[in-house]
Length: 140
Image (cartoon, rainbow, N blue to C red):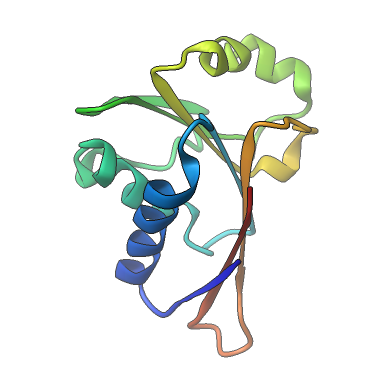
């Protein structure tokens, strides 16, 4: 399914819609896309549904992972841009987070490693030709 986003607010609303309608039993969301396509903005929309302050959500580019405590679940936010391989994921405790059913794990830059996980929602972001519109395509 494809959504078009014309603003940050659209991206957040799309994230909220996808979370409410399609995540259910899944506790892993993989985000694919280049710089500036709206991945972190999307995470802010997810956080809003979970009761996490939008202002507290920042890209974990330098820390690699951030934990946020919401009303309903814990949000675990990974940024794999600086990750070299799957071994680095193990060192960050990635797979332990996946086993915590009270957590929702979101991964930015999922294309940096091989994450062939069945129970993941995969979302691809790209900027369209007008440089203003974002295409957000997901498959469950």
